[in-house]
Image (cartoon, rainbow, N blue to C red; front, side):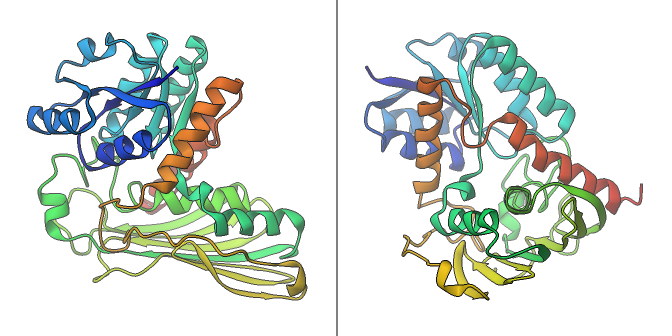
Length: 335
């Protein structure tokens, strides 16, 4: 039997969700909801789905078992809670929401309705990142000491100017940190564990937006490791994300989500298999041409429904990143 998916949102990321979903055998996009009727019509026609600009009417569409949310971040809880209450499983784009309070409301609604809740942090699916996590868990890096994570990306002025929500406090929750940087925040928490103390600074250095386009933080992890994190959308022309992790037994460097250096005492135990290159030019463009990470997460989410297990990144896991984002913003305000 086919699995029927509805899309909430009709912008760039929802197009990615549609392409990723349709690449999975037995999955059909049955309905699309959005506020821009032209975009809704275009996306619906492209994928053979029913178009809706009325949210309540969309929620009543059947057959539909799962919704994938690609609406502005500050609407994820509103859309997800309404969907969960009608028995629809909810997979949402990152971040889970723009505050822990709203994230908690969405998590609670999904649990009360006994539906699955997942969040699209596709970095968790990438082969070299997964390999690095295995090395850390096996102790190949020894006791973790330090991490240096740099996301020096660029977005042109029209990226913000042509959007009604990007870079706004109400719908984006902030700027470069919560929108682009949250992927790296999730990655650091997944690899190194919880953060116990934060010092930070955020500023709007280039773009004409309400929120920050640059943020920097010093992080202290529960395991004793220290870290420096820098996120910006003002670094022309944009550079691949780089994460360097050092432990007592050596250092591993990720660049554009591939391991580019392994300097370990026990180097023979740290074999690296070849992996497909991520073709997305994330450092300089928001366009997603390579949807394999999204596809893998959607496949995992559908399997989690069938097997009645937690998805790769469930609501509780995704809440960790928004909690740390909140802590960085609070520290940056000097509170």
